[in-house]
Amino acid sequence: MGEPSKKYDPAEAFMSAQTAEEMIAAFKHMEGCLDDGELGLVSLRVGRQLHEEGEDPKKVLSFAEKALKDLDQDGKPSLPVAMALHLMGCANYSLNRFDDSLEYLNRSNKLLRRLEEEGVASAEEIRPGLYAVQLALGNLKKDIGRGEEALGNLKNALEIKKKMTLEKDRNELGVEIEIDVANMQIALGKYDDAINTLNMVQQTENDKDSEDRARVFVLIGEALFNQGKFSDSKRCLKCACSILDKKESVSPSLVARTYSKIATLYDTMNEYETCISLLERASALVKKVPQEQDAEGSIVARIGWVLLLRGQVPRAISYLESAAERLKESFASDPVAAGYNYNNLGAAYLELERPQSAAKKFEVAKEMLDVSLGPHHPDSIETCQNLSIAYSAMGSYALAIEFQQQASDAWEGHGPIAQDQLREAHRILEELKRKAHGTSTNQLPTKALLLPRGYIASRLP
Image (cartoon, rainbow, N blue to C red):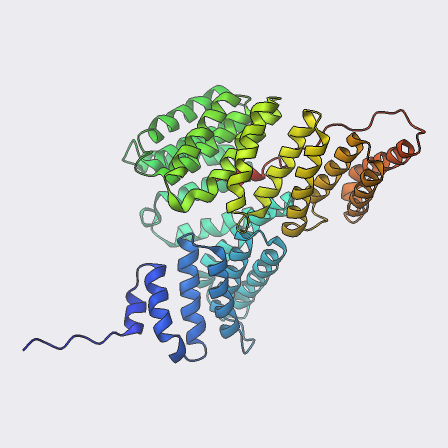
């Protein structure tokens, strides 16, 4: 007679789970049996695993909310609460809820520092979380245009990372941490330091054709570019591409991300055909990866954006229209990318003197960006002004004045930092009013502002 089958133990299954899917399956069996505190810790672990695997941020957020609600019942400071707040911040960032993300990340940052000050946790226990929060704050603030603050957060993260590297064996930390440090050194303008860090990585990297070696070449190329050494930069980028070409079938997502990064550098060096070629290769790669389908729209939008900047309007429109169709499918997860693409599509139609088509695209863009960024975000205001320009070109001065007034009011809320934008908005508004009354023959703006300068590149896969 055979041995009786072992009874399923959800707790054991959860502890031995290797993937988020396995964790969730075990979680469903044990959720009703968990005590206060246990539910929060288990939810936190599931949420963190989902986040690491790049799963739907809404799903990550649901577990983060469950974790925070359970762990923060007594209001006592603890490391798990700080981790839950960080996860809330990351999930909201992925959903483009930047205000909420900033609030949760700031709360996590304050709590971690309080834990160290009050001796609840040691510096060694605090540093990994503090590093993650500072890095997340830096990335968030870069996206919302708070560059100086972002630089401060990245500098803090770099200092914390240096302390962490002293606490662990360098070989154990591996290449990834060195690349991470070099990335931040570049962000901080420490280009020589970054190149030195990356040269050290090259000395320890045995595989001459590894993806990491390709990334190192890209970062050295970026540092050299920022130093104005364009020939040396291009040489490094070509070395990276020669490695990546061999890795397309092995690591399509990573290669696509790296091609996108290289494309951005070539674009900045006015090598736009090379830029477009690399983006098209990246687009072809992500098509083959089911979980990367959303990224294809952003890549195609980027190609349209580059072409539009170069004055190739009809060609740009074909890419921007194609991107609009693709981004519709991922609108819920990335409405900002969709909004920016519609704005640029409107700008393209305005270039072709088709203001009616332009106005329709700007209206969609304004609606998307008002919801996702808020009506007072600089990019939302610019879209509003673009809509005014389109109506002005149609001779619909009443509507043009209405939207220009909205833009002017929104700029006022930005204070002294936006005085130039406010002054120009007022000038255009007054000119529109004179046009409406037939008392002006002055030329009004006929070109729309493209959006954004860096967002699409930063949001590539």
